[in-house]
Length: 256
Length: 303
Image: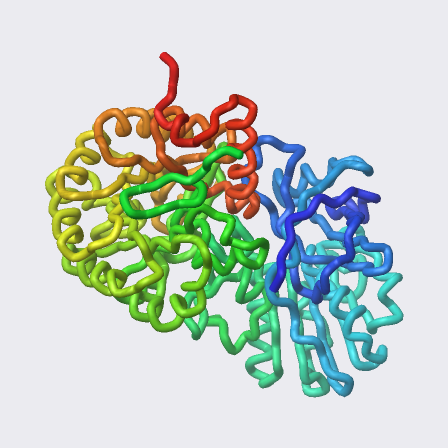
């Protein structure tokens, strides 16, 4: 797969809530195909204390406008610096990286779960899959209503359900406690991206119900293209690189 | 037109910029970005006799101007390499150099013998400096006696260009360099990573599964440069310099200090195009300084 290192220009960098930003980036070249779940390793050029790039899943891709966007949740120094970048400044991306989700087929019944910045590839998956509303259900979990991002633009692609830990939006509790999990028999595919405990809990349910399930991992990585061997995940096929063999894995390959 | 070609014993390089072992995979990963034939040489990921899973996760920690790694020589073993990888990469038009590792001298010899049979591998880099394995690795490279012993035996088994990669985790690196030169090494490459460590203060835990790991990146450059300077004055064989080289200026400093060629390592993680930018930058430097041959820059430090 051809990969690129390219300077993009920031066309917008806006807060979606207290901790999440939406950064839209303009390319001047034709974009290569970018699948939902693929990611980019981003140079943090406005903070000299940060040596390595930071990986982000693609949130959206517009081939016509030649723009890509990222959902950046402030987790540390790297993500914080990105949210401080001004419109018009440059951002250097290594992309597209990794293997994305296996796209659903036209008769599939999909349950997709997003937590934290893991919402980004899940929303892109819904948009790309282009199934009817009844065929794709998305559950998004967050701490409280103000931690959720708006999914208004995605309501034509999927049916949405929400959870919050304080009950301020949707059902109260963790995303994995949503009532939709009481009966998974209607689904034949489950996708998840979010915090590790969330994905592990979902994987356990999918395994029990014997449903196809893919999760997107975010192990610490340096290069993002398979040379440093730092982001390894133990699998039934041995230690695999999350950056090249993933970040999306079928749970049957993981040692969870 | 300036000359960028250098020779390390019988190993001919079209330019003196190689990619360091463990930072450029098997060449194929960089080929996803550009034509790797432009590189001076590719140092392949460290290879052992048998499959090694490497160390547990986490294996990496970002540090000030650099990073620690504790990969631990994850590789599928020399036989897998010969059967499955070599056929795919052997036709690259740039020298491919196998980085040879072992936990015993016998293992080093066995790997070397198998590599010796491969037509398209013109050289090996004998790694006696990996800080991330419990047996072998750096243990061989931190005493003159063991460095001599492994170099002597591998020299008997290998008939092409033999580069020995040195550890900086020693009191006097020139002693080790002289020792391996005396046993027939055709070149020394230095430095491998510095043993370091990082701690999560809030949690009170180490950031690496192995507690300690190898430090690389611009943080180590001044020390690496000093060691290349010392070693190039202590031995007659060509020195290959590395350690925190991020750009052409860094590379030029290593040539001035006495390196015949350089390796780019951790910088590749930040930008896989760095080696190509360095080749271009060296050419530009030579033109600006009206030097027609890179060889005239080697050890040309004025002092």
